Image: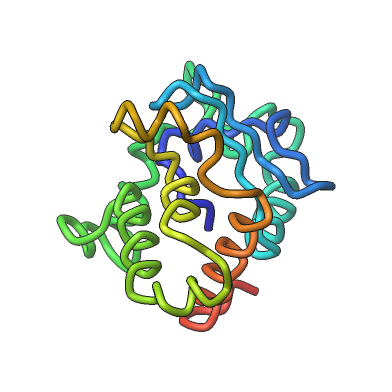
Amino acid sequence: LCGNRPINTASAKWSDIDLNNGIWTIKATEMKAKSEHKIPLSSYALKVLKEQRIFSANSEFVFPADTIAGHLHRDSISKAIRNLGGKDKYNGRATSHGFRATFRTVCSLHKAELLQMGISEEAIESILAHKEYNPVKFSYEREKATMEQKHKLLEWYGEYLNSIEPLF
C-alpha cells in the first residue's frame, strides 16, 4: 500500500507515523538513497496501521518482534508470503520486494488513467523513492511530485488492490 522497501516496512516506528495527518516520514539515515522520504498514507494504509496499533501494544515498532533489533526482520515478510496457504506454496514466485515491482507494473499498465488524474511518472518514482542518477537532471529537480499527487496515487492504488481483494 505504500511502495516501501521491505526493510523500511519491517523497521517502521510509530514515532515516524503521523496517523492524524496521514504521513509516514522515514529518516534519511534509514533510506537507501540517504534522503528523507515522506509517504502520504491512503485510507487503506491508515486502516491497516490503526488495526496494527492494537497488536503492537506499547512497542516503538509497528511490527515488533522478540529479536535483538526489536522489530520484524525484513526477510520474515518474504517467508510469510512464501508460506501463505501452505509451506513454500509461493517459493520462487513472490517476495516482499516484489510488491514494489507489482506497484510499478500496475502503474505502468494504467498510465493513461493516472495521467488523466494528474499523476506523472515522477510521482510513481517518488513513491518508490528512486534516486535520479542523471547529475544534470538531479541538480535541477527540487521535488519529483507533490504530497497531493502522491496521496492521490496511493489512494488510487489502494482502491485498485481493494477491488481485487477487499481489505476490510
